[in-house]
View 1 (tube, rainbow, N blue to C red):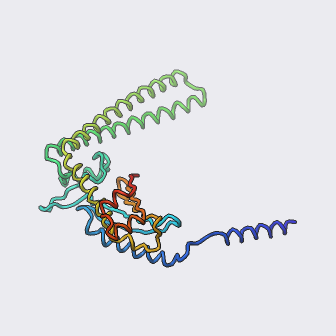
View 2 (tube, one colour; view 1 turned 90 degrees about the horizontal axis):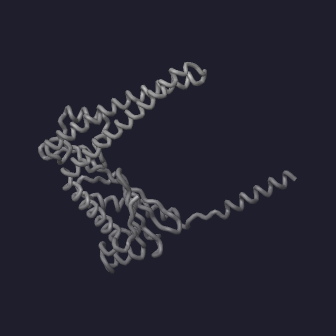
View 3 (cartoon, rainbow, N blue to C red; view 1 turned 180 degrees about the vertical axis):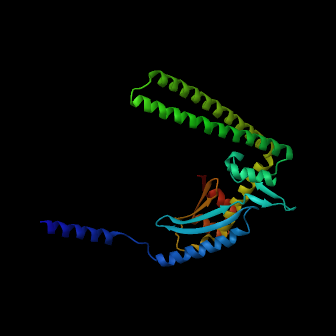
Length: 283
């Protein structure tokens, strides 16, 4: 009986394996994907906004859906200006200077490397705020260490039901330390708000520049898909070419129906129209 069950299980596994489907002409599709990735890499490299680099392009096939083109973009955070002065570009996803490790901040301060494009008075205020945050972090570490020590001693005394007066004193100490931590957190948040204020006051042009760069990137993708989307010849008109743009701070997805891609290639509309007909969303 056991042998019969084993045989039946083996037959089921064989049947399931036989039923698993592999896309037709997968080798040809894989070749198209490699060519398409190279074509889009070449087409987009020169068309990307200034300061944005195409780090990697990958193309994958999704059965019954179409092709997924993944673009990994990189934005240098440290660059040299026309006078060979080192500058940090604050548009690369740093919401606060506090996101830079303390050691890095100290080195940059020693080298007097500026955060583009802020004025000297803004930089001085940012450095002062950053220093205050460092002091608060050190204070918070000290308070937390004292709190942990008090908790350990209290747990030991409670486990042995010893020194009730000392236990009460430790509970009171922990309560005070919790209030100290809450106060430190409040000060830290206030400093964070001040840093955000300085960025908002000094970095308005950066935000508008970032919006223009995003528009240029979208237009570059639309042009490339219109001109070279037909490289993926195996995709049917009802399938899709999906472009996933990955940057350190976020992801953006463009979904183009191949019917619309082919229309654009034939001259029935242009890249702007193709972008209008696409699905786009951020992740």
